[in-house]
Each structure stands twice: as C-alpha cells, then as structure tokens.
Amino acid sequence: MPVGLCALLVAAAVISSLPEVPAAKAAASAQASAQAASVAGAVAAAPGPQFGQGDGPLAADYNDIYLGDGSIPNTLQNPGTGIDARTLLRTYTVVAGDTLGAIAGRFGLAPSTIYWANKAQMPDPASLHIGQALLIPPMDGLLVKVGTKDTLASVAAKYKVSAQDIIDANNLPDTILTPGQTVLIPGASGGAMPAPKTTTTTSGGGRTVSVGSWIWPVNGYNYISQYFWSGHHAIDIASTVGTPVVAAVGGTVVFSGWKYAGSNGYGGGLVIWVMNGSRLYTTYNHLSYDGVRVGQSVRAGQMIGRIGMTGNATGPHLHFEVWLGYPWALGTTADAVNPCRYLAGC
Image (cartoon, rainbow, N blue to C red; front, top):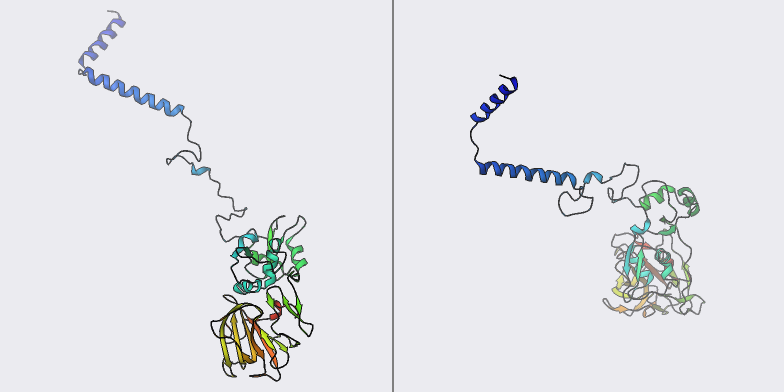
C-alpha cells in the first residue's frame, strides 16, 4: 500500500475518534474569536491619547511632566521664593478721612515710602481720593526697576545698602538680578516728597502752618525749641501761654485730661491724645486748656487746646508726639517716631 495512502487512513481514524462538538457552540466560539481579533486590531491601529485631552484616567501621561532639574528656581515647588518685589506688595483702598500720614501709620511706614511706591498715580502727596488703591510695601524702602547694566553689587552700592539686605528684603533665591525686575531697596528713599499743590499758609513767626493733609499744630508766632532725639521722642514748639493748639491731622480723641509724673512714667500735665488711624496717634502735652472730650472727632486744623506749661515743663510750649501704636502701651517710647517725618516746616 502506498505510504501516502496509509498516512491518510491514520489521520481519518484519529479524527473519527474525537468527541462531537455541537454546531451552535462551535459557531459561537468562532464568532468570539473573530470579535477579539477585531478589537485587538482596532487598538493596535488607533493613536494613543494626547496630554491634556480627554476626561478619563488615561487623558494625561504624567511621565511627560517636567519637574525641573534643580538648576532652575521653581516657585511652585517653593512658594516662598520671591522673584519680583511686586509680589510682596499689599494694597490699601483709601476711605473718607484718610491722609497719607495716617495710612503710613496704619502700616508702620514712613509717608515717603508710600508716596514713592505710588508716585505714578499720586504726583501730589495731598491728592488722595476715596476708592484709590495704594501699593503698600512690606517695609520702609524704595522700589526700583533693574536696568540692563545693573547687578546686585552695583545696586547695593548706589543706594548704600548691603547686598545681603537686598537679598533678604526681596527673598531672592540667588544673587542674579534680571533687567526689568522690580526690587525693594530697604531703607532707601527717592528723596524728599514734593510740596503739595494745596494752599500753604504761614504763621506770624514765618513757620509753615498748613501743607497738604497735615497742619502745623500751633498757631501764631512759634518756633521749635527742642527737636526729636534719642532722649526726647517729640518736638517742642515754644509759644506764649494761651496760643491756640490745633489738630495736626484729623482723628478721634482717645484721651483728654491730666497725666502727672509717675503715670506711665510721664509728666505731660494736661494732655490730649488723638487716634489718627489704626496705629497712628498724635499727642499734645503741657496744655493750659483742653477743649475736646474722649470719643469726639476732630478735623485737621481744628482748635483743640491752648499752649501752657503744665506737668514737667520749664516754659510754655507744646510737646508734640507721633506714635505708631497706642501711646505708652509698651511702657516705653519705642513706638514714638519723629514728628518731622509728617510735618512740613520742621
């Protein structure tokens, strides 16, 4: 018998010995195999999802996100890193009764700091208006824009401050300054504020009485007999007994009465304290007469008392103070500042 015929007979015998498969099951199996092959082909042919597209968990391939190699400052990874001083500024909206000095006192700053930070929108220091938004630096200093040739060393030298002070004030991540960047130079100033364009009058002694929002607190002939210094946290304005004393700036009376030696370590005699902002206070001491009461509102230039020599005074004068906090709240003069920062004519 030929070999090929023998092989054919053996194969037929094997097939005939297998169990019979129902036709329906065989058809279902074939159909399932076909569907699986079709899906597999479709997946292989379709393009994968793109980053940022779709709503499902496969919409973003997070392996594509670049987190930096450590050589580039990443403000998202370190929110405390300051790149531009403008990010350090707060804003304040002017309300009725505000003055530049009162706003400065509220934040513990010099009026000139706020003026120079807002010079572009406030060319006249007395030109505040209700609703105006002012930029408030975090400390006294001057905001400057870095030029193309500026370096940290050159800027520090120009304003006579240390490079480290600039780094600390701006929370800089390194010593590189970028052209166009704004930096705060701590303690620096743009110079004296220009004289306000409002009407200015003078007293009989030739001293300025009214400049902008602050008023010279003594009418008539007067002169400064003692300036502010480390042992005298005020200015003394000498005049004759009975000379009118006026509110230097508007506010609310928080004390009016006698302060003898031993009371807060202070011998002011007959005094008036006026709150001119949340942190700014003015005090008028050694008076012979107090014409206001606690809780009363006073406006700048309004007469509130008269010159005297009550308390620890060797002659008739007004001992005038400016405080960045409630007077004597700390038991010391630490919060008292030079009134000449606020008054023209000092």
